[in-house]
Image 1 (cartoon, one colour):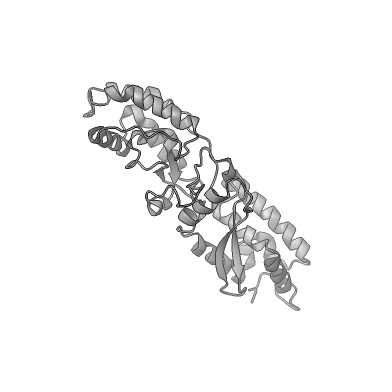
Image 2 (cartoon, helix red, strand yellow):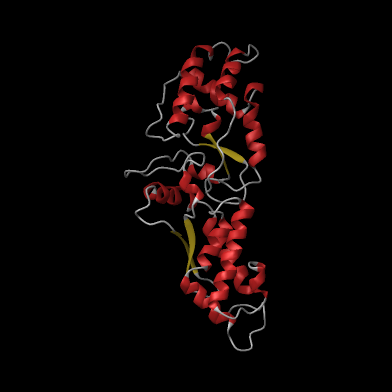
Length: 288
C-alpha cells in the first residue's frame, strides 16, 4: 500500500493518435469516440478516480474489445503502458505493500469500465494481488471502496501493523489497522485492507519474519546481534529500523515496516526485553 505519483502521460493526445493509425484493426472504429474518451479522461481526473463519481460512458462491444486488445499489446501510441510495466516491476506494490510489482491493475475494472482500458491514470502497478482482487471495487456499506494509489493521500500514512499474540516460537499473526474509526477514510482503508492486503501472502510473510527473528534476531534487526539493556532502548532501535525501511521502500505500509510496527506493540516490546534480559543469554541466540 502506497501513495505514488500519478502518471504524467498525455492520454488524450495518445488516444487521438491511436484512433488515426490506419495500420491497426481498430481503424476507423475508434475515431467517433475521440471526443467522448478525452472528456471521460478529464472527468476521471477531476473526481480523483472515485468509482461512485466517475461517469462511465458506454461504448460498443467492438470498441471495448479493441481497447482491451490494445492494452494487452500496446501499439506505438500507447508505448507508455509497456514503460509503466517495466519501470515499476521492482518497486513496492501500491495496492498491497509487497516488495515487487510487475503487472498493471485496472483500478476501475476494464470489463465494467472499458472506456478506461488504456487510460494511464486507471492503470496502477501491482503484484499478484491484482489477480486475487479480480474486479472488487466497492463494498456493501457507505464509504467502502478500494483505495486509489494515485489519488488517496491516506496511503502515505501508516495504516497497518502486524499483530503478534501468544508470543513464542509460533505466535498467532494477524493485521490490525493503525487508524482510528474517526479517520475520514476509515471505511475505505478498512475495506481495502480486508479485500486486498489480507488476501495477499502478507500474514505468511510476517510469520516467516517472526520465525527468523526468533531463531536469530540479527537476521531481521541487525542491532539485535547484542543483548539490549532496556525496553526503551529496544523501542528506539525498532523505531529507527522502521524509519529506514520506510525510506528504502518509499512507503510506510511495506510488509517489512508492517512487521516492525508489530514489534513496537508494548506487549511485544516487553516480551523482547524479557528475552534479552535472561541471565546468561548468549547474544544473537534464539529467543526461546
